[in-house]
Image (tube, rainbow, N blue to C red; front, side, top):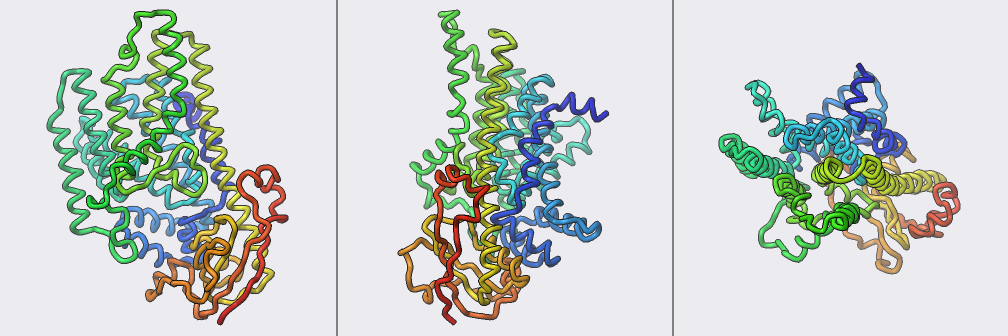
Length: 495
């Protein structure tokens, strides 16, 4: 049965390249908040985070995983990584099913669509576990929408329930809205059949749920107003710029369709481009793409194909849907009508291998950051830094966020009593005693920021020396010689 499943879903094999590396990259960025809560077996800080950010369904998932960790005594990093790979496979599987149900692709081409999704060059950022919860909610939105069109009423109701759960990630309001528009439009062009009732219900579900969220479940506290669209702040230029950034995931590969179009045109001068790009396929894909990126463009966030550092690629997770559909349908059409299988297979291999190469660069960046954090922890362990506030001064923007820094010092000293204030650049700030500090009244906030044992107001200044920029790290094989670089120098302590 396993052999048959893999044969029909061979794309899962590519999880070896896209998902398995996550097992070897420690949690980072905001994922450190979850890691800390699971490690100390107290998730009150996490609960405050997710309640204030109005992400209640994601909180339920966290609570379930926390119970599993305690019942079976599973290492939280392993549990997170296992959930990561399962979610990535589920999400890719769901896009495959959409390709089959709504675009009538057979198993061969829906599999290729899923391969493009699972190798999409953004999954390196899943080493921050909170982002996997986003991806799981995206999976629920896709799954719920597909199930809504079942003939069985119980399955349709299940679909509606999954869609409602998926709204824990607010961009799903736009995604589900976009799916409804795209597939209704496609169904009308294909069959001249307009399913008005289903369309109106989904649109009503999205709009009413959004209103209920705004009125009764809006963000508050530390996250009040976070990621909310403000009409008075909308900038058309920035929207266009962000839209272009998302488009680079397509633009980088446009040479492939161009090559095929050129070859077809040389063989048939009367060939019309619109014949290869029928509106009933590609306009719905564009609508899905636009719905996927619109919420991010409106709040001034984006990512491009070559944005490897940090976790900004999370904004482009949903672009993988339209990307997979576009190129799967394109290769299918030219395979059916114009070119031999060998040529098609060669170009299919090129796009998949390019995806994996770009993805591997992002994974390498995360490995570099993990090595830096590990070395930094070892170096400060020898310095016996006093409890209190810590300023890290660096020539470049070093990969230590507030959460990572606090959690790192907890792992070094076994006590949540050292707070990393910020990353400063040399010569930008000298009066370290007057740094503005976020005042934390709540014990839950202190748990959230991993500083609940902090009682000392000392400010210690550390400086990173012998730093390398990105290019020099590659030239000097930083991942193998990290101990030689980024030395930590004690500057002073003010108490």
